[in-house]
Length: 293
Ligand SMILES: [Zn+2]
Image 1 (tube, rainbow, N blue to C red):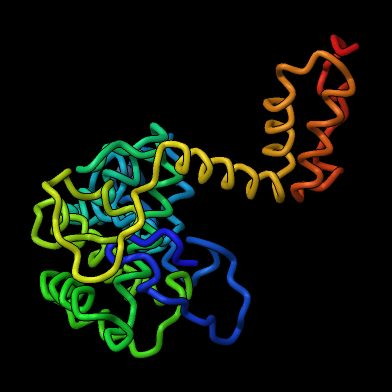
Image 2: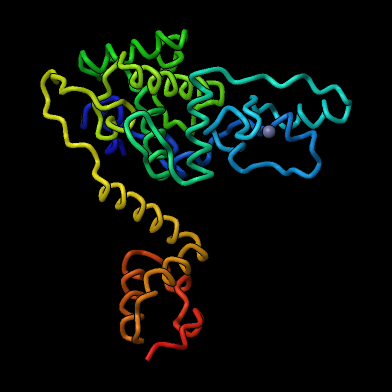
């Protein structure tokens, strides 16, 4: 956790211990957050609901740009034919959501520093919402000033008044929204050059600048395209460990260039060794590879 910092210099964010219960379902999962719907999508019976509306990841509907509202309230108002007008989402949250929807729709996000793969974007965003929740007392001067600037610009108290640190997914939806606002504000301030992000992913969120002087620690180089590729691969592997379809797809992909059964079995054994259950990994025959010798 916290290996890919954004605002804070590598290592500075420290490691937060999970309180009780110690289990953590992983990024974006398992929180008690609002069950939301788009009031404009709701008026079209042909539309369903989007899975992303149930995750504490976005504020708005990707298509209409309006605020997602409590789904029950939307349903009731619709039945009474008294749907209030949709609320537009203001900057900087609108930009944050635009990035997230671009990641979901196209697999890439054009950030002020460079274009990144969707997997990198979700890591970056998850790191940001975490970093803005770090207790001030654990930070060095530069980071403390940066985070104070961010929270001041949001108009909210420091870390929205949170007393005890908890993973983002375990915060109430109200506090999660404040963390998203702080993350969006940090992105805006970094893009404008009003704060200097110093983490490993910092170069993605701020335009390239002349060399600036760091106060103390040696910054790690920014992630290379290969390191981003590794993140992508790790994410695919993580998915394949719990999702038979993803595992099957990965095996099919990794064995595309195999011409013999032995090569196929070598790749299959590799995936099994990497923690993908054998039952998720079909045989060559099951994959329709009758061409192997
Ligand atoms: Zn909508």
